[in-house]
Amino acid sequence: MLVSRVALAVFLALGQPVLAQTPVPDPVTEVSVDQLAEVMRLGDLFQVLRDEGISHGAELQADMFPSGGGADWTAEVSGIYDADRLQSAFIDALRARMSDRPDDMEAVIAFFGSDLGRKIVDLEIAARRAFIDTATEEAARVAAEDAAAARDPKVALIRRMIEAGDLLEMNVAGALSGSLAFMTGMSESGAYGSIPQDQLLSDVWGQEDQVRADTSTWLHAYLGLAYHPLTEAELQSYVEFWESPAGQALNAALFGAFDTVFREVSLDLGRAAGRAMQGRDI
Image (cartoon, rainbow, N blue to C red; front, side, top):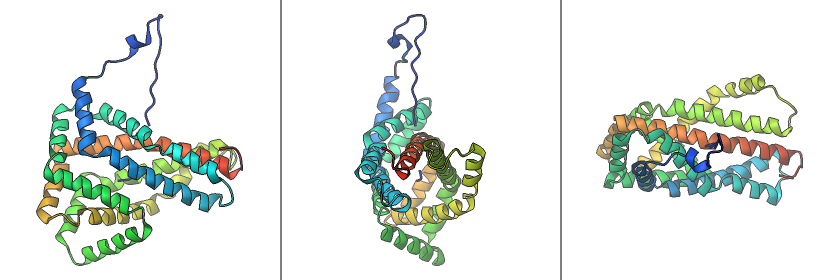
């Protein structure tokens, strides 16, 4: 999934201590979210996302400022994609979205804690890591096209999953949001001078059709690679989970949390790239 930022403000009023202003976490929610993070292997996932980010940073340097950046740019990218910090922010955002849905949380933990759930999570993370290699991704794209041409029953199930989670539109929205944040960061750095926000929006929306086409291809390739080892019955069960109320609640929470964390990542990356392009200290 393509994958968003948590800002916390503490206000002091009438001389009251900070602790009086800080809500006490619900211990049940804390445990539930910790269990959810464990069964979904969020620690391993965010290590993969960090590796993706480091690779993306190297591509940005090669495309935008091949003779600049250097060790400073590498260090900046590494800090922006700090896995522990991003995971912590993501879990906070996920907790805010799932804390009032204890029954759904219980159903989600039960599914991903099952043998099938653990198998699926392992496959999804392995496929995501494999996609860092461009040759593997290209091979998966070809395999997805071949499977569709051969009318593989799993292709219909994958399409059903994409529809159940609105994965295409949610990923397109996330990609455009990230692109706008990156361009905003670039503009704030002064790399291209002061660009009006409406022009940034126009430039981003001009990418929509291409982003949608690329995202559709990526989704079918990634999901096809991840779920290839599953039986048709296992994939059917997974699709039915995403179509359930618990699956729908989790899907919305995941996309919201990713958007919260990674929009800020894109903004920081744009600022750093803008400074590097101008040869300024990162």
